[in-house]
Image 1 (tube, rainbow, N blue to C red):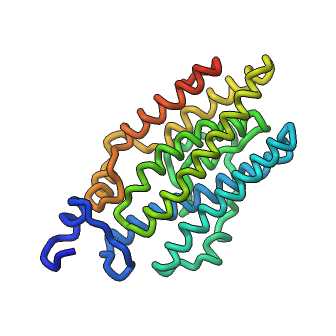
Image 2 (tube, helix red, strand yellow):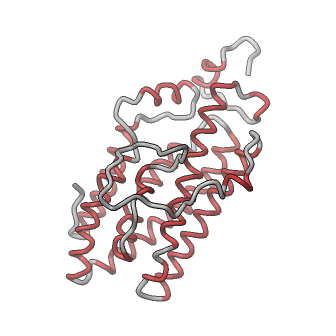
Image 3 (tube, rainbow, N blue to C red):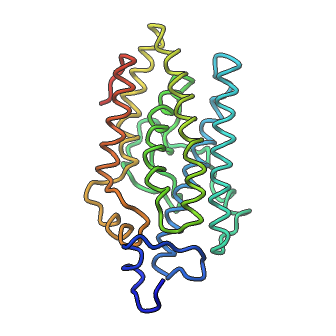
Amino acid sequence: MSDTMPIEDYLAKGGVLSSPANVPPRYRGELLRLMASFVDSELAGSAGFADTINDAPGIQERISAARIVLEKTDHAGEVLKIMETFGADGGRYALHYPWAERLSREADIGAARREGDMRLSVFHYPLQGWVDAVVMNVLMGRASVVQLTELSRVSYQPLAEVFRVILPREMRHAELGLAGLVRIVDEEQGRAKAKASVAYWYPRVAMSFGHSGSARFETLSRFGLRHTPNETLLADWRAGVDAQLSALGLRGQ
């Protein structure tokens, strides 16, 4: 970076940063917030999904569920390592919140964060059985792919590299979920349960993309931490997941 070029101009031109030593305070704060949201969401997601492993109808389904839990926890750990270079206490961080804790099924918190817990709001809602878990995994799996494709372009190079490694694994999680859902809707009872779960989870997953016209997006965009507006990412998710649901005789709301 040029000694005379303002940091925002440098980042706007596609510049990248690679060390905590050359990160300005405001950028540092936004970067840590972004990483905390990812780590908290992965930890909460894996903790919630772990409770459904024993609900799986067969050995292969249990293996797939266990793999997802393991890899999501690992993803959180990889990003937490980067947070540690900024002074975060990784050992204490992973234990600072009961990640399996959930609100009631009827709660409606929109996109709100809760008491310092930076998980996406969708991970505050409880799963109800295997079919519900698979449907949520399909919808949120597609959302994760869209969001990680965006995050793989962040201007903090070490984090972008980690996200690029994580992305294909999250794509595989989405594929495993879709394969499970195909088996579920093959039976009438399973299809009825899946439709009910789609109706419940679809708007909650959609909320994970944030608000249209977000002022925070403008700030993150100036720092090269975001590139695509929330509404565009949401439209991308809707297009992909609606096609999957339609092919299975299910529908987004």
